[in-house]
Image (cartoon, rainbow, N blue to C red; front, side, top):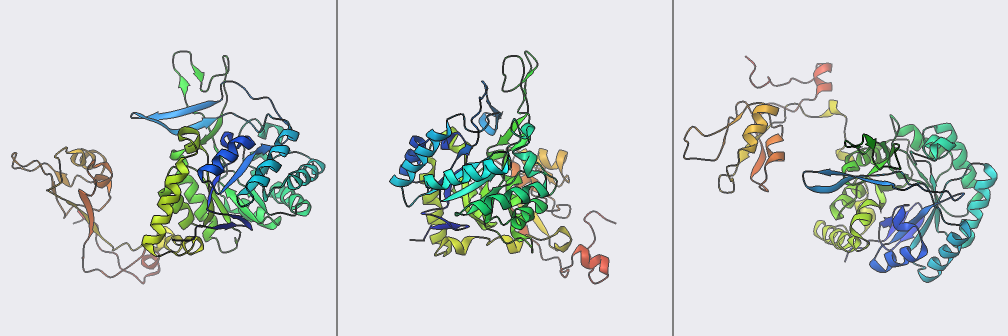
Length: 424
């Protein structure tokens, strides 16, 4: 069997699946149940000066009958006494010595950082995660994303933590920035041993149109919260990959954001993550979701010939290029499998109204399979995306006789682009 052992910035765990710092990692009893279910590690819900949370605090984005494809919260850090948390950290680590226990932290002053870091390590933390990402409540107090959005502050506080810590320090980055690179480099400059990303995205989940109040509602008011869940995965993958491919960035990455199954996890790992954190899927489905994630990852690695996790980390990064380096002369067209087509004509509608008007109903009304005009098809993939039948529509490469040429080569005069379809 493949070796799933993860080593993320020196934090070792039996597999790469960690609970993210959130309600599922709020107490020792919860984390012990999670470890019993198979989770390799857990990032303890952020410790700091305990706060008072509000009610209600969660919101969901529902779409076409699917509940909570996106999730929103206005919850803050721990509302439990620090002494209770530290006692439970000690108990968890004593009972589960092989699982990773990472403690998330968020305080204000240098002395507070020194004190809470020492207490966390004394309790048995295998690593620390600096919460520089919370986009609501705490940022108004000068913490969370207020730190994560300022590279100089990020670097300074990271350097404090590294100075005081005897265990690896991960810096959790906020996605609420225009470019993630300066913030990852700031964590690196501060001496951080790795980064975690992404934290939640500043958002409003919706409005109750009956009373015109934002959701989730707290009496007659609400506020912006943090967006997460399956819908944020593309944003998270992009930011993880941006750092993983950057020439000057060389820290390990713990990937977070919309991991709902083993395929999602493999994508994060293939784009450079050495561990993967999960929150929303656990909140919606429970700790046992990790069983399928572990089995799926094992089967995938065995099928593809990956002996150990490190062999998979970053495997997709070489394929990530700038747009100007893509082959403009590479051509595909849509092919419809007449045996599996059910004649719904969703591809016809999508192509006519949203793409290039190249898929048509058959002139023979007794034939329900649409016809692709390959002379006009540009291979945009929209028909394949809307088709409800797996593998019914394929995008097939066309040998058009043109040599490879990129936009950059075209601009430089070293490559010739084929004519556009429909051009005269």
